[in-house]
Every structure is written in structure tokens, then in C-alpha cells.
Length: 450
Length: 182
Ligand code: FES
Ligand SMILES: [Fe+2]
Image (cartoon, rainbow over all chains, first blue to last red; front, side, top):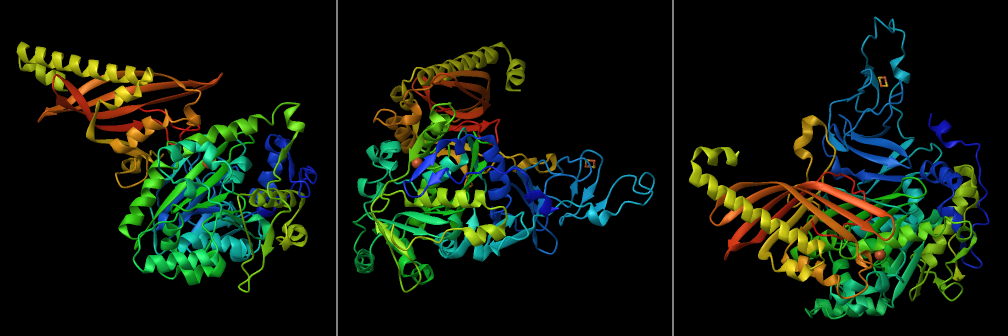
């Protein structure tokens, strides 16, 4: 069944939409319905989608509803402790079998005619099995359709609808894994009850490209600066680092040199109070085993990871998932964690950020939505949608440095490498008709000048 | 409920309850008007220093598990603010670059179904329903309906707001932000 889901006879040629040579992007990719439908097939159904953290559904029967593109799925722990991802659609007429967004249940009972499904999706019974179906229905083939694969990385559960997808760890690659390690290596994570959800009238890609955008911060979020919530130096630091991984994963944002890292560590170890913007970040990395786990370059990056296509790992012990709701609408879902052995002061700071800075009422984030919705709107008109957008910042002026550890990176100022990498990957995913073609044709991260 | 009980306690008590109801209503209407009129600094003066301003998340659950509908204190919330943060929310509007409110949204608050649930030790527990209607730019329109549970603390011949718990009739917030005060 999964195979039928991912084959399509529609194909829109998007090969000219992003030009990596000029860093220009055609705007109609934000508004074209056919392109959107192809994204559902070739990006969301094909890729690994974040479902939930294992601690959200600890007990048998615990479930959490999520989406793979526009397919709603039930993420549920069964009696063997295994996490299943099941399409929320009854195979009898297609009705949903679960209408709650969280909960605990013994089975999924369809409200239309009463087919009943076990926690692993198996059809276990229905009214009139003997009298009406004359015992001739093969229950073993009429269960809820499972995702093709479900795997976890350090407690973070992902699913794909494509049976030919590579294993999750390979899909993430070192950059995707590092992005999750930023959070997972802090210690034992506990999910804080409640996923903050809101809708923005924007194309999902504009929300995603913004997470790499350290250019907008001082302008869009100028109030945070003026209120003293964030210092000028910390808001959009001049020290920036970009790490790019195969298949579109990336980490972009603040990052400091080894010298600065060592210097900060030395001062902190001597008991000096934090005095430079990155001292707080370095102090964070000095807990537990993080320095070794993140590696010689990774430990120095305080940027924003994106797990392609749509999972942002925020530095505030949060994840933000950007779920498409048609070309013109995106749902933002914030997942917040507490690190069990995190120092009290740090825990308070992170909760402060989660509660007051991010989310729809966030002092900082409330200003983002309109920029994205109006950028989407700007791609609707007959004139506007034919005009290219400029993603050229820093193009050709930087260098991807190799490292003996394998952690290549660009160390530079504010730039748009992460955004370019995202749209280039997007184009490659959209052009490929299968995992086989994508794996054969996708770009390797740049080396040297870039 | 309290109306019935008071009625049984005689005319005197009924008049006292009506007077108190009137005072409470006038306070809440005045407060709503300050927000609608964008007189945010004046609004801040109505808040007690120890105010807790909280809007939990709401989720769709089965009827059987409806006790999990709202997140609890300590869980995630849309607002979980003390006076310092509320002051910051107000200040941000005047420092420039508060884009969500520049141009300012137009809001109108309807406060109804006001009931005094308890009155002890100088504090009144007041429940009400509200509608906050917002338009923005040319054609954007949002509205939120919900229930509030306020604690009004007597101060002089009026009140200060010592607690506000806001329960929205939305799970996924259907607007691009919550840049207004409830
Ligand atoms: S649609 Fe589910 S039982 Fe008929
Ligand atoms: Fe932003």
C-alpha cells in the first residue's frame, strides 16, 4: 500500500526554480498547487518525518496524533512497547478512527460502522462479522495502514511512508544527527506537557528558510533588543558557522573559533562570571559529555539545525515542526523539553525563553508570522510570481573548511548558505522520482570555496 | 448559584450582592476599554504586583479523558506571565519595531456572563465569558472566545487584578500570533 502512496504520474519540472550559480529563486514554488502536491509525494511521503519523542507516549496505549504531509497518523505505543505509526483512516470507508490529539486507549474503534483496530493497527473485529460478512472477510489485510518504517534516534521518533528510504541514521547523516545531539547530549529529556500549535498563512518553506536567517533578527525582533531581553552581541553575532549535510540537512547560526571556545572555558573554569555573549553557550556545552559527543567543530556551533524537510531543533530545548496545510498555510508545532539534570538557573532560562519568547504569544516570535505570510502573498500575483528572489548573500565569498574529524564547516559572518542549501536540496528531492534517483543524483556539500 | 443563595438571605444581602456585581462589572468593563483604547500603561496600573496571568493549552481529548483537556501549571502555556513580563509586553509596543502591532491591530472586547464565585479575605473570584475581536490591515480578521477566571483584590474603593486564568475555545491557535492581551 505504501508503494502506491508514493508513485505519481504528475510531475512538475522544478529544475529551473533555484539557480545555485546566482542564488536566485523563482517565487511560484510558494504558491503553485501542482508543486505543492508534488511536495506531499516527493518530500513528505518520501522523507523521514518527526513524529514525537518517546517520553511523550511512555505507556501502552498512549497515543499522539501527527501528520506526514496531509496524511494524519496515529503514533501509538503498543502492548509490547513498540511505537507504531498508523494512517488515521479506516479501510472500510476512510473515516478517521481517532479524533483526539492525545490520549490513552485500548484500541481504535471506528465511529462509522464499528470496525475495531488493535494498537498495532490489526483489524480485530467488526459488528456482523458472521451475520453480514458471513465470516468471509480476511481481517489480516484490512488493518490500519502502517508507515513504511518507524525508527528512533536518541528517543526522537521518525516515520517515512517510503519503504525504500534509507535507515534513519543514514538519512540524518552526521549533520542531522549532530543537530539532534545538540539537544539529546544534554542529558535525559523529559517532555513538558503540551505542544503549542498555531497557524500562519504562509508557505511552509518560508518558515523553514527563516530558521537559518540571522539577518532578520535585529530588524524583525528589534523590540527584544530594545527591551534588553537579548544583548546586541548575542542577537545576531558576527561569528557565524554553517554545517551542511547531504539531502538538505544543515545547521546555521552563531559559532565561534576554537580559540574563543578555549578562552571562554578557561575563564568559566576559573569561576569568572560570564562576560561575553557566548559564555552562556560554552557553559552549556561544558555539562556532561557534550564536548566529546559533539566533536571539535560541533561543540563550537550554537546554530539552528534543520532536519530536512521541516524540523527545527531550537537552542531552548525545543523543537519546532512546520506542517504544511496547503501552499498558503502552515502549522507551527512547538515541543518543549526539560533536561532532568540541568542546573536550575539554566532550566529557568530555557523555560523563560520557551514561554515568553517563542510561540504565537512570544515577545519575539509574534513578529515573525506576518513577514512570512506577506512573503507568500507576494508570490501570488501574475507579476510578482514571475520575479526572482535574492538568496545570494555571501555566495562565493566563503570557504568550507575540512576537519580531521570529518566535521566540515564554513566560518564566516551572517550569510545565506543554509537557505541556498535548503532550496537546492528541495529542487533535487522534487526532481527525483524515487529514493534511488535521489541518492544517485543529490549534491554533496560544497568543499573549498563556496 | 451565589445569586440564589443571596436572594434567600434577604433583601439586604441581595442589595449588597447587586452592588458588588455592579462594582465588578464596572471594573471589568473599564479594564477592557483601556485595552481597546490602547491605553496600555493605564492598564498596567490595574495589575497587582503578584499577578499571575496564565493561558494554558487546550487539546482535543476523548470524553473519557477530558480531564487532560487543559495543560496544568508547570506544563506549557500560551501565556504564563508575571507583572514583569506583562510590563515588557506593554513596553514593546512603544519601543519601535513591534511589527505584529505596527500598524496596530483594532480590537474590541465583549465581556459577559460575569459571576462572582467567591468573596473572602478581600479577594473576589470572578468568572466571565469574553470575545476578543481583532482586525488588522485591510482584511485580516481573528476572534477568540473563551472563559476567564479572575481574582479581583479590593484596593481602596476599587480593585486590582491579582490573577487571570484564560481558557480559550481553540486548540490549534488559528491566528498567526497572539499579540493582544486578553
Ligand atoms: S468507515 Fe470505519 S467502520 Fe465503516
Ligand atoms: Fe524570527
